Figure 1 (tube, rainbow, N blue to C red):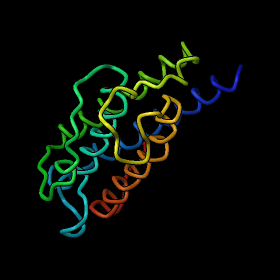
Figure 2 (figure 1 turned 120 degrees about the horizontal axis):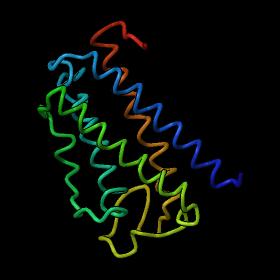
Figure 3 (figure 1 turned 135 degrees about the horizontal axis):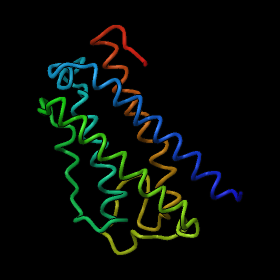
Figure 4 (figure 1 turned 90 degrees about the vertical axis):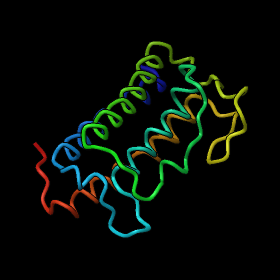
Length: 166
């Protein structure tokens, strides 16, 4: 097994585990819990799910699957963002399913890890630029998204006190 396959398998296990545990947490919440934020300046679970979806759309759906480019970060962090529990679950699932799909494609074609699919896109403002490879994007999101799933779990613990992990 070469190093590319090892990295892809590791990322697949990590993203699948994050998806499982975060969905399990969201399923335990009420509709009110989804839109609640600890302070007026803090993000709600709805904001975090919207942000995860926005990041996946920008870095995976747009660049890799040809979806139209939409950059609406201000909406992701809008105070009072409304989202039902079912919408949060579906949006989160769709986002992580997309990442997992890209990783499955990479597993079948590890040479694609060094492709640069963003070269003809509008200039990115952020941690990655238009020269980024698929591997750089996957590793960036590997660092970025778990910070937000951790926030979701933390907010859920604030609301519920105790979460069931079965």
